[in-house]
Image 1 (cartoon, rainbow, N blue to C red):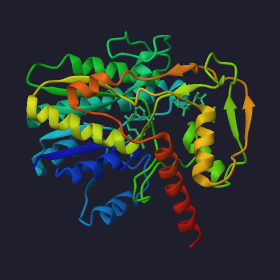
Image 2: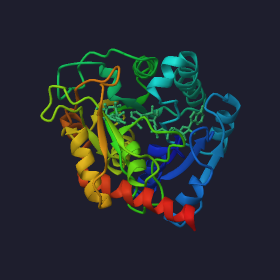
Image 3: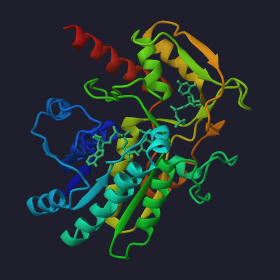
Image 4: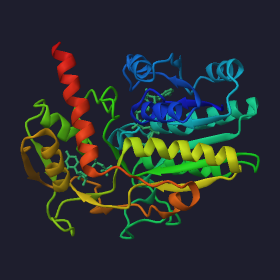
Length: 335
Ligand code: NAD
Ligand code: UDP
């Protein structure tokens, strides 16, 4: 079976993709510098799959680490998750974002090329579409950036588009990944106060934070709050399996949205999470957050046609799995 390198494989999306790939029969190696992942993630993965997990603790910016890894393992393809991902922080530290996200990709591609590994799946983002009234968004919508983070994702896509024909590239534009693995043993685990909606609601549900601030209720949306295309992280992980299979089987590159095509508002999410945790979660309407758009949803058809990908899990599944994960963490902490 094919052997896949996951850079950033101990992170939120990477760890779920690890499990989906192992379940699909792939052999997987993780490279992560644990700058944004807990050191116990590999143990948790091991407990779930019941087999040893191969992890290299290293940096994608370190060419020596990459060369040694490609020498030690006969890698057939790479999924490149490793990146800095906080939009707000990227405005404060644009050079760090260019260095890790663009420099890291270039370093990885050079090492892959030297090792003769020319299949890569790249974590891109709906943020490459900027602020647009075209909703749901098709993949051929022009790209534009509103933050250094978004710039690094567009730059990454453009670099990959310049590669020669002997490369097979999967560019996956994620919409809003949320939820946790069905085992409730891995999930999103932010150490600071979360910026994103679902991790924030989760901390209100656990009692760590008092109430949710809803950023604006005067958007032109059905209930006035922002609408997003939330996708269960396990569906997203399945999308990576299909992307890799397509690269291996066809040798053709693809660029696709990974979303559900359905929009949910902030208040839809509060209601669904309240149901999942069994209590009405408190919230307060606050001013709009700078840089937010009213609506952001995917046209999901291209991923279905080209990869056979279709998200199957509901908003209720996303909230239930998130709650199972965070409430399990509370029990662990108290044990
Ligand atoms: P994450 O921070 O949980 O995972 C990234 C992982 O990469 C972490 O484990 C971190 O320790 C590791 N890492 C960071 N810099 C590294 C380096 N220089 N060398 C080696 N490892 C390094 O983030 P995530 O949410 O799992 O996101 C994964 C990818 O998906 C990122 O590229 C991100 O930009 C992209 N993405 C995420 C979202 C989202 O909402 N979570 C949306 C769109 C795109
Ligand atoms: N949001 C909110 N309160 C929060 C965090 C987010 O009301 O504490 C809203 C935000 O304005 C947006 C939606 O929730 O309408 C999703 O925000 P998130 O930061 O999760 O994702 P993104 O902005 O990247 O789509």
